Amino acid sequence: MIEMLYGESAALVAVALLIAAAVIVELGYFAGRRIKERGRDLSAGRVDTVLSSMLGVLALVLAFTFSLSLQRFESRSQAVVDEANAIGTAYLRSYLLPTSIRSDSRELLRDYLDLRVQSTRISTDLNAARRAVLAKAAAAQNVLWSYARQAAEEAPNPVTSGLYIQSLNDLIDAFGRRNATLDRHVPEPVLYVLYSVFLIVAGVVGFGAGVAGHRPFLVSYIMVAVVVLLMFLIVDLDRPRRGLIRVDETSLADLQTAIAAGTYGNGIVPPH
Image: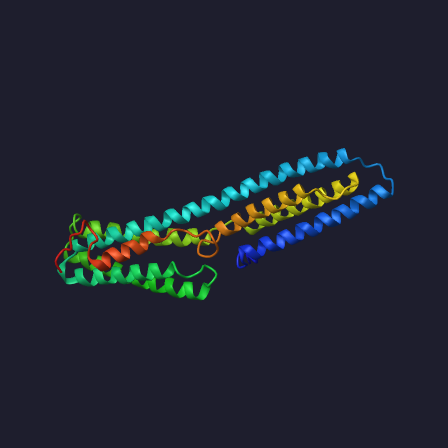
């Protein structure tokens, strides 16, 4: 499914919604005033009843969408920590490998970590650059797995090569989970429903003011602005590597720094 909104800036979406809502409030006001001038039997109380119902629907959809967005944000944050732990464990257990492949495995794990840190700096809407880095990481996994098979052949010991193979499997699983969480966001049909309900509410607010014979109150515009702010947060939370709210990916960078400095693993650097 082609997603049009996901590639747009959250701020741009919020500004467009704010302008659209303000215009619809005014259109609703003029429509309500015209109906009142024509003397049609439509009391402001009926409009207020409809408005109260629509506000309830808006609150429900808003809460549901915000919950979806926040859950996905937390899943992405946890996936980063899980992958950092998996890479760190694999690096520590690589010291258990036979000497013939130990050094090469550690070096490739460091390169693999560099690729994963590099991927954190690429926005999710830069598909070509992201795919290129992911392809390099997948190729590194294949080579690491070939080293693991060689270790199992040279030293078929569950305490040495077996632990490393298990940690390497966890590393590959963490890679897949993290990529999946980055690609999983609030479905656009849900956002379209939210935006539609919001704009309908804006129209009813203006219409009610027109039927009552007065301009929309300032508090009505404040309510519109607050709802737009909440929708901005929903959209921004759903874009993990751009916008104001970003997933904290320092765990990978800290691991990279510790390994490069030779201090990872209680500050003890095993001999080469």
